[in-house]
Image 1 (cartoon, helix red, strand yellow):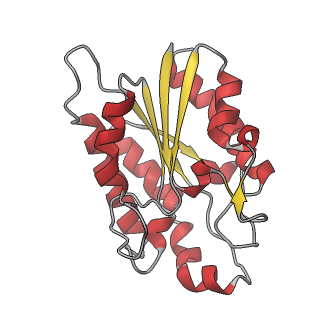
Image 2 (tube, one colour):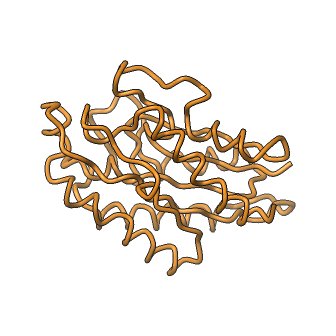
Length: 212
């Protein structure tokens, strides 16, 4: 049995911008990926609304800093064959970080956490797949528009920056924006069809990285 950790934010959790609740289990991209890969792979969905790569959100009601949480989650689910990191959108908020450059620095921090985690002597460090989230779109939703002011331009840079980081660090890379688009309901989240598309789009590269 191969184990894959899907580490992300509300796009991985399955936030539904229409109902303001959560997409059905079968529509969330980690579960779509699980079905596509079959029973020989266990996809562990580890999504948290508001999670950043490596930045504190002092207004949050729980710990949102992905770098602080990741070591415990790696230990919880070890051994792992692959870690999928799909984060960065929340870094574009003006409070936590505010730029694509900050997001890519945070992603590099997460890569190093996975690589240099104190794995048991029986476990090898997993491969890493960096996923750039779909770029932010315009919205008439005033709270989200204010929260992610300037994020349209910054989010458009994430894919190229993450691709460069993947080349630099020897990670896999996938641009979720190549298969999915955010909804203008709030500018950052995905409807059910688009979140399913992320799971379907990831299947080929995950298969390749797992040697299936």
